[in-house]
Length: 285
Length: 75
Image (cartoon, rainbow over all chains, first blue to last red; front, side, top):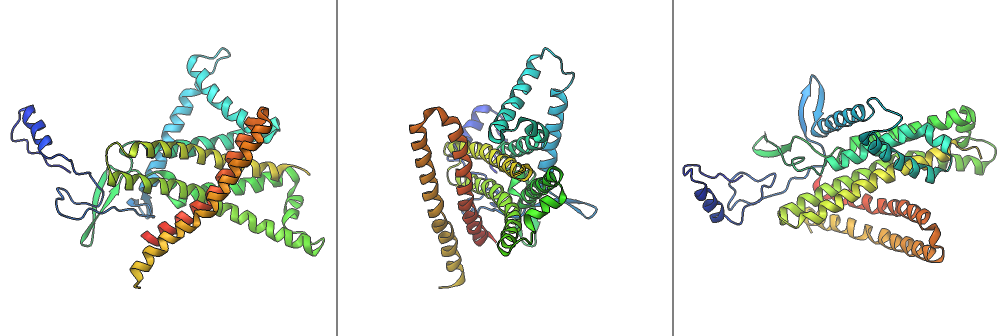
């Protein structure tokens, strides 16, 4: 952090001081203030940092971010759906446009409109939540505003907010929800025995092995869902930190645009894959 | 070759080699998709959405390699 002396209160003097200290040193998490000759290091931690505890329940900065995103989305939902009218007002029209675009996309992939209507709330929630939480991580201030925590003899920078999907816990949660709901939907659509019969059937040795492979593939879906989302968002964060560490000014801009694109694509891919697996689980061959 | 330098080399190799497969895969996917659109321009919407889905699958493998590289480097 630059400590500018405010002893001279004339604005021209302030500008003169800023110009004197050009090039401004980037604020890098992990560097101590006024670092001149000290080595500036980047701190990237795989594990989300703890902010505090609510009597034995650990509150991390990603959890705080998820609460903020939830509040924003719930408020947006309540405001958007408030008093819907047959002749839509402009704001209702806009939200209907957004939802209809998502619905048409799902319809095109699935084909069966009745089933899309049944699962639309579930799938659209995945899409909107993951998209908003990915884009929320790009807002200036997220990941940079925080405090220095003293552990032993060295300082660690703990930001208040951190992108939600850069936490493996969150992405594993998404993956588990997706796979479990797919199984339940399959059981509801086909009947419990028929659905379980896909995985465990003793008709012939080959069928048995295919069933075991299907079971393993379900578990691997959890891993692949979670690591795809986690890897993309976490690697994006690391990329942005490195870019801002190297050249803090114009250079990170294309990387921010890349991250916005990646955030959108990952939300889309997660939702589309859930949709495809739901389709495979609920269709009667 | 001490442990620290091996770690660095391991992290670099993990992502370097791990990106070869997906790179080739995505190139092939895009090539076939473009060829299909060239043969049948009316189906370009469907082909595009399927292509993006398949590319995300292929890219996931590269992301797994990147996660391993990051784990080696930072943990």
